[in-house]
Length: 255
Image (tube, rainbow, N blue to C red; front, side):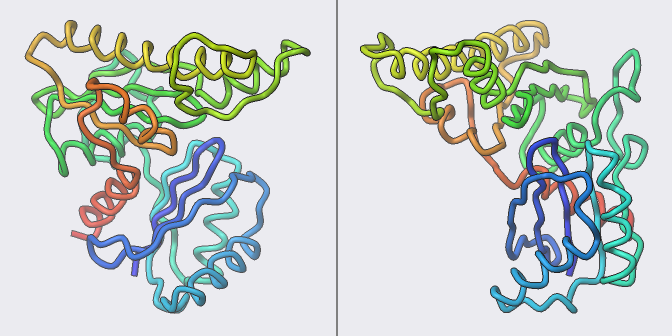
């Protein structure tokens, strides 16, 4: 079985994959100094609970935006699985990049672009609700054209709370009425409807710039279902998108 690892700035996703099937997945808060032994203890326990068996893991593929974590993940793969982890880079994703400086685009964004091409259609926009809220644009010809990066929703909530002593830190929810009847309600309304407006506005402007009809819009990340439920700008949600892209890259590498 394949262990696919998606290291984000806030969370790290792990998925055990059998062929093209995701058998089980978990999330763990990203810690750049987490040791190989700690990764092993975490995964051995979870795999045993699921009856999957740690010894069944034969390969590891990693997409990481936290370079400091890579050393420990490489050590984990070598020491506990007996293999070299395959780290995804821009050059081995297998998608053309149409940017002035292609080296600047994160591997995770290209993995998502590849996955939307294979499992959905193009032209497409992938909205990833992570530490940052990113919009990645894939043209009808399958070329990665660039995108938009906005502050992440939870990051914005934390920044507002930190900068304004009297404002409470709130959870991100659909507050219902736009007009807040309390401070908490007003903040939740500003966050939810503000980001909803950002999503709809950015998608509309990207579509106008692309100029070849309405692109397919796919959302991923923990908050994707919350926003997708309240707008027609998002066509579908797929929380496993990055893992699906990693599976495809590994298949191509082996093939």
